[in-house]
Image 1 (tube, rainbow, N blue to C red):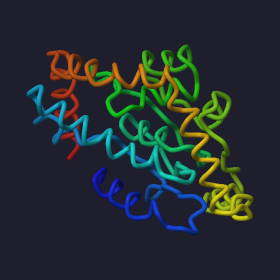
Image 2 (cartoon, rainbow, N blue to C red):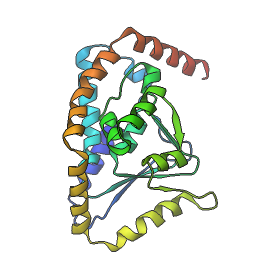
Image 3 (cartoon, rainbow, N blue to C red):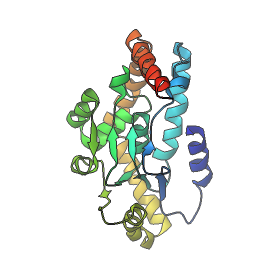
Image 4 (spheres, rainbow, N blue to C red):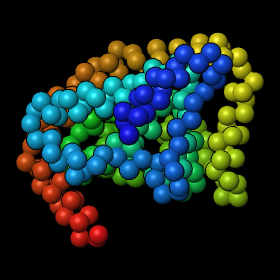
Length: 229
């Protein structure tokens, strides 16, 4: 999926009339549920962890560097790597029932794909540390209070209508203006502090990923999944 996302955004980056892009999940349950635990369980060598992290971070970077604003339409929960996908986007619109959870700590790992740097950019180090260390889900209302949501669906409206209303003023802009605004946003996000956090994330991920505590948490999670099938 990450590869397909990267290919899709790369293929449309030079579209001259593009004003914005919307990334939305299917259904109402999840925007993105994070990585496949069974697949990730096979990455047990340092080189595998580095390759996975490099590929996945690169995929999300196609969103971060996309030349017009990218809106994450959270039709449902954004969990773990899915939360990192959400904050790789420039703005987020929440369904009224959607939550976001940086729950990597439950699996005994740190953030993986640049999401830690993005989270700290949007909410500050203190709030980001709280969300990471407590591995807590926050609802749409709290996400908006923290600066992680630009709009929230009202209970009496369709989510697609919420997204459309949020996008409507952007439709009046000119493509070159939207590209200029996004260029400013890229520079604001990727300041020296963001770059320092990004530089530290791969090493921290590798050290936590290869720790026995991660494998114990992964084994327990896979066992729970298997027991429910």
